[in-house]
Length: 172
Image (tube, rainbow, N blue to C red):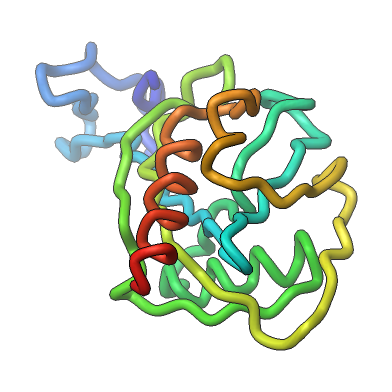
């Protein structure tokens, strides 16, 4: 991802990108970076299957990922994950920091937005059924033996689901 071109403080044109990905402002001397945006995703496990969602929007519309999304400024990742699952699927989940089982840097979309994807294993609270919001085209429950045939938007989501199902089968 390209760093800023103009200083957010004073509007001066920034210097060329340095070796660490930042651009220095010749006017105020500050360096500006575009750091990865954190995202959260949940492999929600129930009865030996995990819930995955078909993307209704770009990027990667029509492909599958796990429920989740970008966390808000000053939002704890666990609270952000619960909020995202509630917004996307009208479900409540049980999840904690200890349930974070993957951390993967990657690019989101064709414009190369850098993200850090935090992946959690989670359990449903209650017996509710998913009610997809407008950013989810459909949902389905998958077992481990179905994962390789699923067209995942990002390979790390397949591995997150595989890990969560393996942990659940082992009683974890």
